[in-house]
Amino acid sequence: MEVNCLEKRKSDEKALWKAFQKGDLQARNLLIEKYTPLVKYVAGRVKLVVPPQIEFDDLVSFGIIGLIQAIDRFDPERGVKFSTYAAVRIRGAIIDELRAQDWISRSSREKAKRLHQAYKKLEQTLGRLPEDEEVARELGLDLKEYNKLVMEANIPELTSLESLINPDSGLQLMDQIPGENERPEEIVYDKEIKRLLVEAIDRLKEQEKLVLALYYYEELTQMEIAQVLDLSPARVSQIHAKAVLRLRGMLSRKRALFL
Image (tube, rainbow, N blue to C red; front, side, top):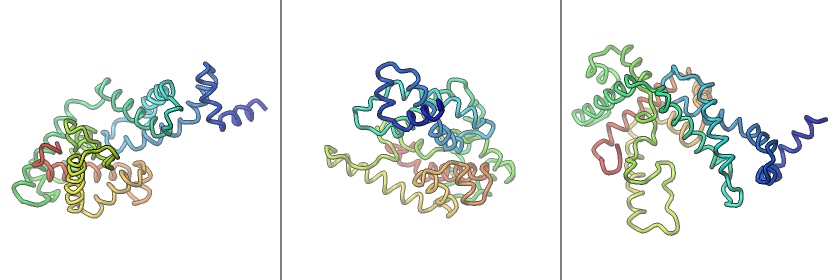
């Protein structure tokens, strides 16, 4: 009977927020329980852009910290959907914890930069997207060693699509819809970023474009993409990392907008 009462209470979210604002700790715990699946969803997406040795359960643990912070700081009166607000906090907490614990080693960062430089050089030299064999040759590796390097170098700073945007521009890649008070020059600036990205993505291989579409627009997790494409999760991560590295090479000449 008590379990049923708790479940009924958890389903009334507005009442939970009101109770929590009055200091009801049980309401707070019910909100954490209610939104734990969101933490698992965000962790599943982050898993795509971190080295394979980082465990999913660790990402979930880090994300719970972000969820708790989001619940404690959320103001229901602002009219923002909590899941939208919390997802940003959860992802940020995961990335912050990875950095704080230095789970992404200096070696992984160096490998990622090495790959980026190779893609950038070949793109500028060849005037087209380099093939895997050409990148491997540039790095003095065989294909097996090259594919292993791509997985080891899979870090958010260089292999997530958001990382392409120059932070000094103050822009968010997935939030390029002009607002009502936006100045005309800002709208033109945003449209230019969109145009360059669309042109660059269109030059990718079909499988790479599909993985990017499923991840960034359909918002599937690494595991869900693997199931849709009948690939291993590791292979999905590899395709995603290569796609972003190719884009980084193509867009590297637009330094004011892209990194």
